[in-house]
Amino acid sequence: MILGLVLLFGGLSACDRAPSETQTNPKADSPQHQREQTRTGPQAADEDEDEACGCEKLDCQCSKNGHRYSAFGVELTGGKKFDLVSFKDVGLESSPYQSTAMLEILAQSLAYQLQRHKKLDLSARLLHDERLANPSKHTYCEARRLYVDVWHSPSPSRWGYSLWSGCSEAMQFARREIDIEGETDDLKSAIRPLTKSIAQSLGQANRQGCYRRRC
Image 1: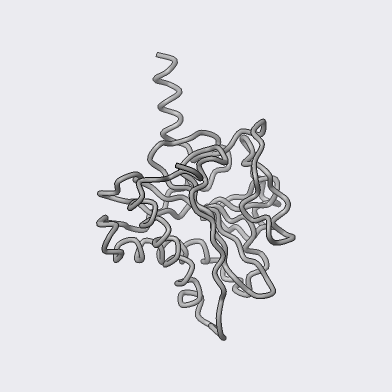
Image 2: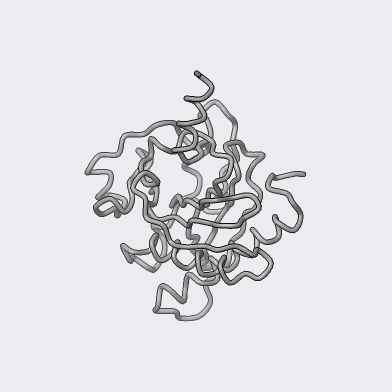
C-alpha cells in the first residue's frame, strides 16, 4: 500500500533531483547559469517571487531561486518513451524577447515540431495544467515525462536547452545551445530553431534507444 501511494504521487509530479545528489549545471557556460547546481525540493512560491520572475496568474510559478516552472506542456500520444513534456526556465531573463507569453509559445512551437518530425511518429498537442507550474510538484521522478530546461546566453545571443528523462545527472541525455541569427522581431520565428533542435535531439535519442548521458 505504501509503495502504491509513492507511485501515485510520483505520477502527479515533475521530476526534481534531490539536493543530496551532486549535479552538473546544464547551463554552466554562462555566468547567469552558475546559480543552480541541483533541482531543489519543494519550494513555496509567493506573490513577490512570481512578480519578480515575470509570472502572471497561473501560467507559471517561481521557485525561491527565481526559476520559472511553466503551466504549459506538451501532451504526447504514441511516443516510445514519453507521454508528457514539461518546461523549466532556468535563465531566459537575458533574452531580448520579454514576452510574458514566451513559455506558452515555446510549448506550442515544440508541439508543432514534434508533430511534424517524421521519424518520431507521434501526436503532440499543447497542454495547460496548473499543476505543472507548482514548484512543489517537481520533487519526484515520473517514468514517462520529458523534462526540458531552457535558457538564453548572451554574446553571442543563443538559446540553450537540456533534456532529462529522470532525476539524476545520469539522466540528462541532451544539452545544446543554438545561435539566434539575424534580426528576428517575431518571437515565434526566433524560437523555432530552439524547438526544432529539441525535436531533433529527441529523434536521435529515439533512434539510439538511449535516454541517459551514457548508454
